[in-house]
Every structure is written in structure tokens, then in C-alpha cells.
Image (cartoon, rainbow, N blue to C red):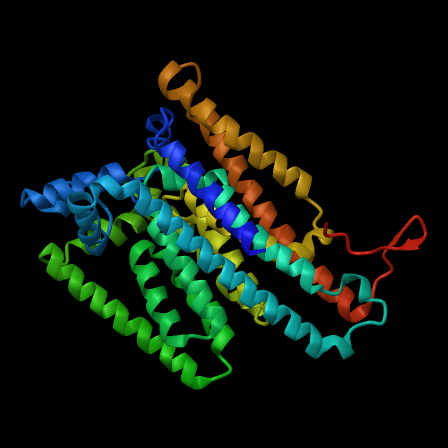
Length: 424
């Protein structure tokens, strides 16, 4: 098994390295599906240049990353520019390691819960019980899914700052599953500072470690202290607090209507200005309004709750990118045991593949050829996001159905014979 991991790590690194050094990279790194005003490396370099010239970075509306990201990027560009490709590939490999560790920890938890609840299960639930070998394969597939996902590869190859965010997210999820309260709070503060929306992961973290009041206190303490330190350091780096408007204010108000794979740009291009604030609040609340109902239903499975929240924020954030989508999709093999209950796999798969291909085509027809318009491109992005919603809801329904069958039994038959759980 270790040999298999080494092979896929090597192949995943090589895929990224070859794309970074191929003629395709010039076309990939500027794609609106990959780079946004928040994660574009071109904007990072512009911010570093302005900072080096002593020009206020946040006054021009070009750079919208955090001051700490600016400081780290400046160090990388000025001192490690010849090794940027290797650094970004290494970050993706570290992210993969955290995902594998998190998936492994989660599978152990699933087996433990199954062992504890086995006496409560129906007598005919044997066919759908979890098997250690299947779960181990699921962990391996998590690594393969992230390393070979086209979404993750292009995001890394384009040197987007989503690579940093995904690393912090993976570390946060791992800390949550291991019960490391201080680590979880600190890493969640870092990833929230970086991209704002992951703050919703505070809820699954509390559910995971909420059995101990001490752990909850540790989470809030480390989170708040880390946020305070990050903001203090940021104010020192940027020379004031204007970065808040240029970063989080930019995320919330979404003034840049450059097309992307999200939903904001089209609606607010067409929106009357006097309706803008109302619909802006409506759109932004979509990323958080589902936290409470989902947490109520999935309170016993914070990891699945985390996946659902990551997927929803990838759809409803103001400036999403393919890197956000590739991250949460790489976790799906952890729930390999739910595939038997999925009903929309073919539909979702066809929608994701077709929209991933049609998106760049429609964009080029609209922007460069002038033979299409914004409606063509938005129709593709709308279908892409609809496919993600179908994927998440299908997975959640599959979880509910399996839980029902475990405790109430089921009569799964194929040609009159009892069905078995086929996970090969």
C-alpha cells in the first residue's frame, strides 16, 4: 500500500510539473474558472510590486488578498522565485497527506461507531455493514482523487493562492477529527482569515469535540486569540486597517463582476442598483443559512456536515474557483459505502463533464469570437453549480437511507437473491 501511495504522489507531482512547464499553462493560468480576483497569482505579483515601491497596496483595487498572504508571497517571489513551482507542488502534496490522515481517522471512527451500535442494527443489515478493506481503499482513493483531479491540478499549476487555502482547510479537518482543539481553533482562524467562508466549519468542530466543555473553550480561545494576532500583524504590515475593506469588504460586496464559475457576477450585472444591497445580502446568506438545519440533522457525523458546508460555500461564495470544487470532491471516496444508495450519479457526472468542457468554449465564443453572449456562459456555470447541489443532496439522502436501513432493515434483492454491497 505504501508503494501505491508513493506512485500516485509521484505521478500527481509530475502532472502538475509538466503542466506548469508546458505551453498550455499560459492559457490555463488566466482562465476565469481557475483564477479569480481573490486568488490570482498575477494580482499577487502586482500587490508585491506596489508594496515594494511603497505604494499603498489596498488603494488601487487590484490586490484583495490578506496582508499576511502578501508578506509570504513577497518572500517567495523575491527569495524563492526559481522554486515557486516546486513549492506549490509540495504544498499540494502536504495537503494530500492531511486529507489521507483525516480520511483514515474518519474511517476508524466509522468502524468504532458501527461496533458500538451493532446490537441496535437490524438482523438483515449485514450486507451494508462497513468493511475495513473497503474503507482503506476509500482512503487511498481520496489521495488519488485530489492528486489527479483536473480541478486541483490546474489550480496548483496556475499558482493560485487557493493552494494555500486548501492546505489550511485540510489541516483544519484533520485537527477536528483528531480532537486537537487548540490546533483546530488556530487553523480555522487562519483559513477564515484567508478566505472568510470557512468560518462555518466552527459548527462541525464544536459538534465533534462538544462532548467536553473544556475542548469547546479551547476552540473558542485559540480561534479568537489567533484571529486577534492575525489582525494585529496585518494592521502592522499594511499600515492600518484599510485592508479590511479591500479583503473581506470586497468578498461581501462583490464589486468586481468579472465572469467566473459562480452565480454573483451575472445577477449583479443585470441588477438595478437600488436592489443591489437586498439581493447581495440574500446571496451571501445562502452560504450560511443551511448550517443550522444541516447541523441538526448531521450532528452525529460532523465530517459529513463539513463536506456539505464546503460544497455549499464552493457554490454560493462570491468568487469561487475550480480549486474550491476539487478540494471537497476529493473527499467523496470516504463515503464509498454510500455509493449504493446514490440515484443521480450518471446525471451529475454528465453535467460536471459537459459543463467543464463547454465552459471554456462558451467563454471564448462570447469574449473572443463575439458569436455568443453572457447568457451562454452563465447557462453553463448555472448547470455546473446545479450539478454540485444535486451531488450534495444525493449524498445526504444516501446517508439518511443507509441509516434507516441499518436500524430498520431492508429487503435488497437482485433477481430474487439477497443483494450484497458491491464496492469494487
